[in-house]
Length: 114
Length: 114
Image (cartoon, rainbow over all chains, first blue to last red; front, side, top):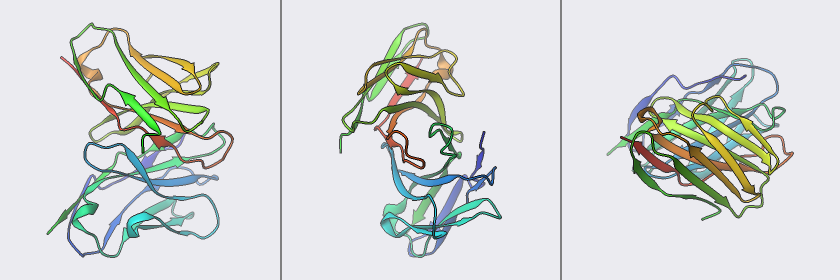
């Protein structure tokens, strides 16, 4: 089974500053990678996903992530955050072969300050 | 977007009571999942189902049972609720046979067991 590590449980940042949320996974076999966002009192919404091809993936709301196979990482970045980006962000991995089971990280709470 | 709905949205109950959480989807997906979310632990898989006749245990199925009444409906039951089952519960769906298919989440049910 996969394991997913999000080392930063909370990331405070000022508005308009850049941010990087880190995600590492355990296995380097073929995987599919996802970032989800959870706004307060809501379900999870897909930000972006990596299936194959270009290692730089662009998602909604100006977010992007880079797949690094050698480092088994899939870090999420945004060059300039807004107050509205305050939310919890989850990295997820699916090995695809195992009936599309997802393995989630523990989440990173992004707190954007004015 | 009400493609995946969960009822109730909030529930407070007492130890020992039987509780059922319901999930319905209009996405036409065959695969459905139940997760629980606890602070600092991310989402953990309780049960998943690939069609009406196929139900599988996830990593934390003890104390829970499920029923797949139809392609569109997947219910989670707590036969005798206990306080450590207090959590946020999510239902999710995904398309069949597609490696890397994203999962679509409902809005969640917040369950409190006193």
